[in-house]
Length: 212
Image (cartoon, rainbow, N blue to C red):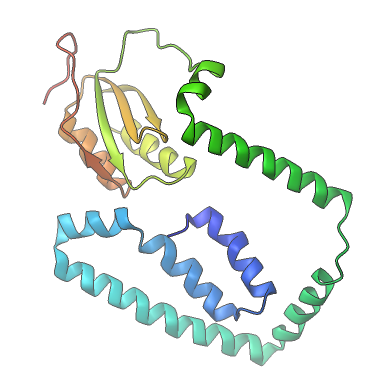
């Protein structure tokens, strides 16, 4: 599984290397729709039979759409344009903008790896903003998050729950920390609505107003 945002440049690079546009479309369409979190949620809510139908329909329709896209490209002569672009990339010329973007990407990648694999050192150097009101009312684990965009989806879904004052979703620890007068079950439903799987019962200090 590759996140929807990250799959676009991968598909473009594969096309430049000779992958057909139809196969690239299948990769773009099926990948985000068949991640483990989505399949798990569908299985728990609708049953394994629906999961089989869901995966079967996606597989068949995406392959048919891929063949159709290849036919359209051949009909309008777009394949020659792709070969021309590939020839341009094969010249080996790298401009200063490309080099600068590559360096920026490398820096961001190293920072991301540092934050993921050395979280204690990251928090020491970049301490999180302290909350004005004690600790979180509850902490619920979230399975299936692979990128910051996933964390943003979970954050927005939980924020939409009535009674939530504040929410912080940490990608490294795979947890959602929530403040407010709200039940754990409501938070779990919000996580499932975003397409991810809640884990644990929620750690709720005695001093909070959380309803379980």
